Length: 103
Image (cartoon, rainbow, N blue to C red; front, side, top):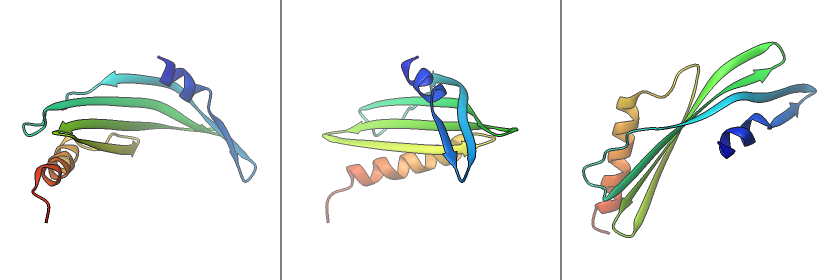
């Protein structure tokens, strides 16, 4: 995908140490949210390579439509993704705040 190719081309230098990403992939995630009218979920996985160390990273992005409001949750995990239970709890909290009447 275009996003995966873009991530694979990212390199950086921090305090003389070079790094970059490789093997970036984008997959779809289930993003059901009963209170949301629309929802989408994506996961990007890649290897973060710094000198001789490689670390898998996971970026999950969820989007929910609630009326005219758009709600987005982005999580980042190193070595393993953020748990589904945590993502569901955070998503439910954000959507409930979006549908709550204003104070």
